[in-house]
Image (cartoon, rainbow, N blue to C red; front, side, top):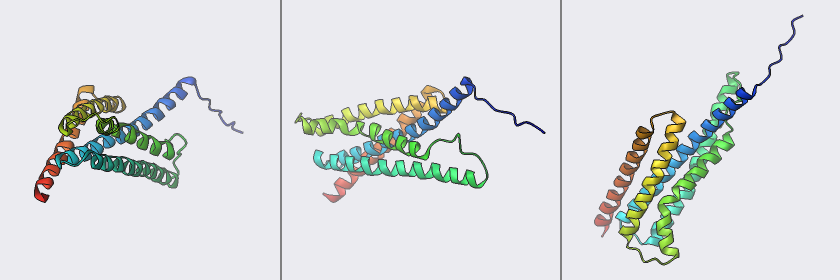
Length: 194
């Protein structure tokens, strides 16, 4: 009679598993953070280009932040869950796979956290009655959002094991393109409407 070999986990294998889970969740954090910064800044850029009042800009920005962030979190949850259901049907183990709930929460949290950056200056201007010129507020917002893109790019390089400079530039350039497009479109639509 053959005896079943007992498998033991070593501290090293536990560390590797923990590191893998951290990388899985960091990748969702990066995904949510990039989208949060890009879409919220694009809304701010479009509203600034259209010369919307600060209150309107903030309503659009926060509505986008909360609704789009929730949608991204739900999408991440459903995607991870569907992937695991498919693995289960194929007879594969999902024991070491990331939690769909934690993936969804990670995506949503990072979307909100990083997506708040483009709204901070306009919120402070309104709440503290700073009297900022809307273009000055926009330029400061652009600089702060660029710093957020750089931070996300650095995190992205860690998750993807990619060169830092390439990841930072890629994230920054794509964010600038999205924002530039939104600003130009907002400006064009404002001119067409008025």
